[in-house]
Length: 185
Image (cartoon, rainbow, N blue to C red; front, top):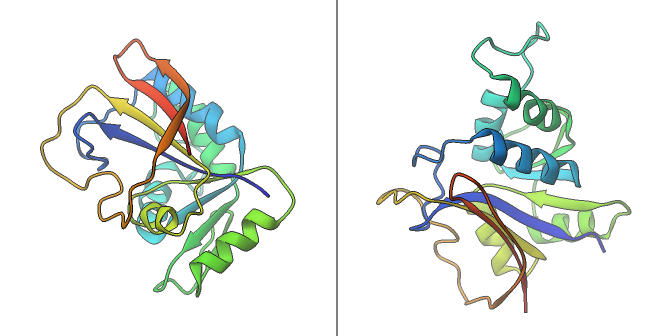
């Protein structure tokens, strides 16, 4: 069975909104690029898919925007080329190397996990909460940023039941951020 990992940046106070002051740096982008390369497929909800696509999809002319710095390019290339699946009730079609998951999310994710291949990776806020409630997430990976946001959506808000975790990996970054990976006990 292919493992499903939930990965996200989060502030010390649990905020997981991209406007919360979680600015990527060279070291964290290299980390996320390597982690993404380990996944066979990225799974997003509609909002996360559209947000990521607006920033990381290669423009039609094939040239990345001038504002993108050199150390962002490997991440941009990796996410642009990655296979993606999008969970949505409102989209009728997707592209950007993506397929659409409609209907029963639990069945669709179980089917993906049962297919041959490597690991699956899910990002975002709302979809991972649903998948955690269904017991479908095999690893949780958080890069905790040394920021107190004081506002915004929080990590796994509304989770129905507590999930006890075991720390299986930890790495500190020069910025003070800490990457941690957990598995459910």
